[in-house]
Length: 455
Image 1 (cartoon, rainbow, N blue to C red):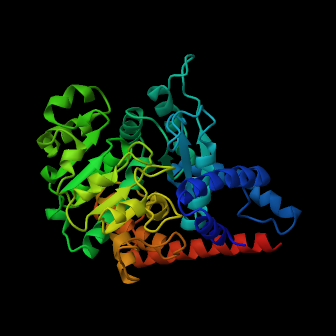
Image 2: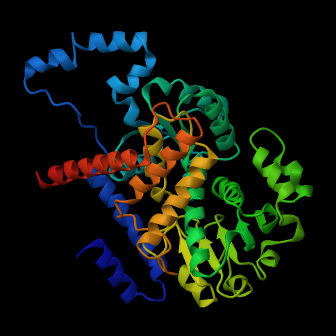
Image 3: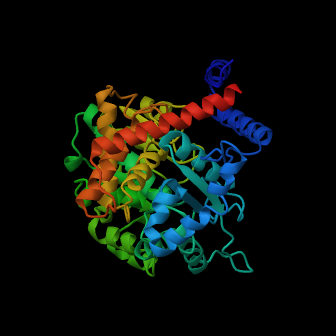
């Protein structure tokens, strides 16, 4: 029996408690599967010595020529080593999924998972790194993390930050983006925001709405929702049409003090430019709203069905908390939503950053971009939405499936094109070339994995 069939049978046997039961089932299965395989990734050579004499080329004395060439021109490290197709996935494990601080090593399961997806969906290598950058009391220190990650730059073509608590995640991201000459991407923020924007563009399409005229409520002001607000405005949503709420209330001018200090610059701006101040609570803001994007406290029950019933007819509800959404999609639809999405793959309309980061990073790597701008992120979101539309969208299918091998090449091409337009590309290439290279690399990885599985 396949896993998909097992989940369907579980839903049939336990219809009333199936969402909770399937979550518990997946928890148990994950522990068994990870224990059996000893993690999710391993490292294989990309060069295979035809015979022992070739070690003189791949190792000593041949590699001396490689070292000297890079010494004379450091950019040749992108040509002569795997750096150009290698990403560092870095965390301090202070905010892992919905589980919070899991200790320095606690994020490795997620980091290995990201490395697996980058290889399978993007066709490039990734190294998971859990950093202990804490003081003796266990408090994470942004400065230590910034220095540690900066020291890794010569080994990688890009950096993916993950599962870092706020405001440290903002401080680390902005400091590294300013300091390094390779892309630094915060996937919890920028990656999720990309897919939220892509999914929302298509959800608005199928419900007959426009981004420029929709009233949007964002429940939760963490990394993903604050970045989503940023990309939504960059894509054309008027800031005054956004109402964003943290656990204490709306981000309004009288909340500026809550977000004083380094790292909160964007939150302070949201307090000033968003329309949050017109409402005293998220429940009030949702009355007549077109869209709810929730990325807050895991549910169920964080968003009661009556809140959805108070929204505009045929509303859009994204409940993105992991591992349990703020409201299950069935409840949201029963309460009147036309489109319901979650961050989980066992429900329709999965808003998962894995639809974005493999293609975004692949595109940046292929043109050797010096960074990833908001413009590149918006281009990625529009490419993802456009790819879904080519295959047909509906209220239950606003985004491509995770098994769609055409996603990463389409996103990579759009990201690379924008990097070239913004002058960030070290090695400009046309979109068609980037798309073809991405598709070729992904196919090669999948062929290798199938060969290994068959052996």
